[in-house]
Image 1 (tube, rainbow, N blue to C red):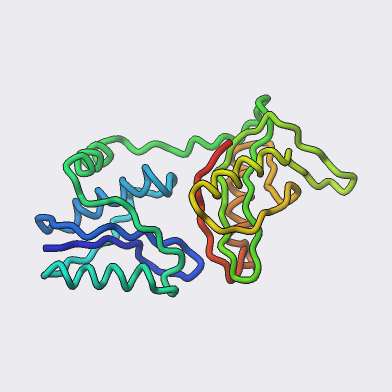
Image 2 (cartoon, one colour):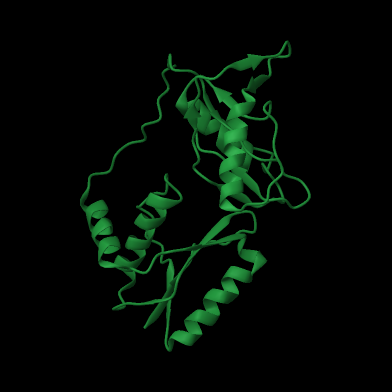
Length: 219
């Protein structure tokens, strides 16, 4: 039967990854696991594999699945839709089997300051319904200035490289500010700062009303 894969718990501010339509011997657990591993390895690198929620639907004939897939990609209610090249190939199933048998590893984010430079993450500008593109978290050896008010301003070349990446991908975006990046002394603190800025903390909702794409890009 034909299968299409989606990310559950739709939210207009989130990203939904939609596979192509493919045929499979239907058993939702291994197909869902293979899809989870594929998305983790290619898009959402911190995706937990312990979430066993079903992420697929099966329909026959294939035309029904194709219509369903097209409707999801064009539906604004599911957020930013990203078509992905997943079709449950033997290689993708093998990767899932390896991941399932591997021992769980703790987060590698460190709370220790590093001499290699601060950890940063940046994003494009929101407002007016623009999609916000967010970098990964990485260290930079390039200058980070401090203003008298204590604000941190990263080197503009970091943003220029990120914008060049987005342009190459064909994304439409509003450039952000070198003073709008998160700058932290440790990787763990950078992860917390990025998550709070994007999704909000107590009493706030982060980038309200904007679609958010975590690109994973690093300098």
